[in-house]
Image (tube, rainbow, N blue to C red; front, side, top):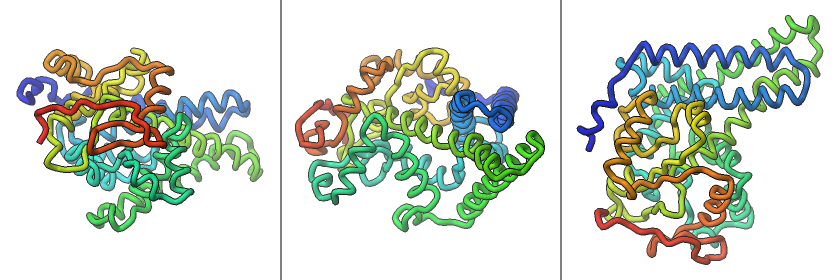
Length: 349
């Protein structure tokens, strides 16, 4: 299978550099525009656009972190670190959690920790606060809060000992790099704001920092939470509690969801939703991912979870995918009622 996809793994340094330059110019231009304008309505629209550009830069960093963006390893590491900075993502901690854990044990409970559903028993053992958080996270408005709190803060910025067992000096360096970027960007916003307004009023400075830095970051978290929720959460997608029940076939072929977004939006997000091909071979760069996904779907047909995105469909998935019965492979609501039964392949184990 991977031999069949090998043709899509060719890297183009020239094309990768063009992506980096274009998206970086977009980011810097929107940063200045968010400081220069004063209309709240226009600032909100620009903040939303900036959140999407942060997502684009993150996808470039994501590919570089996999070593699939440029041909050279050192260049991938350098550019990946830089592209991750606007989303305040420490490169090496993301590499451990995403590359080593998520891609190696996709949808295997106790290993893969991204949107892992609780069982009914685990949910009932939570405190009132814990149950409230789960209900918020798995609601249509809670995806961004989930990523901000559960993933960004507790896995990347201030991980517990359980998730920081592979702590190395490079991870400390990357965290320092992220916060240095945040400080330098804040100072730059203050400097640009002063140059444009010719005064240093504290209220004007706070407004500039809020709209140019804080609001885009919050909206980025909403977008990121939405994307990773839809990558592996679907009424047809199974989760596994036992290693002997899980397999590469279930984790990398039947678990990733290909959510078909409108063509223009899929291109804006650098084809990040063409997810099956990416899980089968992480060496496929984003600029060849669509062709690779088409090939995968031609090979596996209905085994691939593929669905055109609609608001109605999304709300239905959120309604049905609350808890998971790992023994009988069923999605449940918070009361324990079955909402979807998942077919598990005989190729597991």
